[in-house]
Length: 180
Ligand SMILES: [Zn+2]
Picture 1 (cartoon, rainbow, N blue to C red):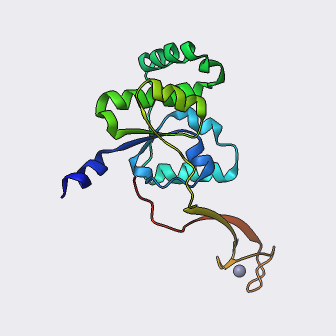
Picture 2 (cartoon, rainbow, N blue to C red):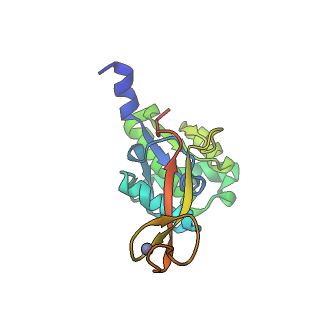
């Protein structure tokens, strides 16, 4: 294994809610860490689905350590960003800071929130935006027959066996996920 490959594998990405809400993050779920509070911000069906799928694919969900939240709060109150930050934002920053202490610049915070990015910069945490030019994943809706399990694009009744069709979500990848 080459040195730079090993380096890539050691990277950890701390994901904020937007990663699962936007759904076009190129980082593999197995390389991501998030906090339990993020789940409360999954409002849409798609977001809930992506979050669940990411957990199945190896996303780690770790509790926030209060000592790091305290450091984040001190920084945030100096810039008045604290008014713009939710409990989840503070927690994600605290988790990123914890990883920065463990693995230095291999800890990367994924967020599009300007207030969060601002505090991260003050704490020396590396930030990567969620939004990418190329949308790499897409959720598509399908109908599946509850009787014969055939898939259809639309309709309420199976044209083959006459059973009802139910809505089903499916994630389609346009490109293989990769780490930066
Ligand atoms: Zn059928």
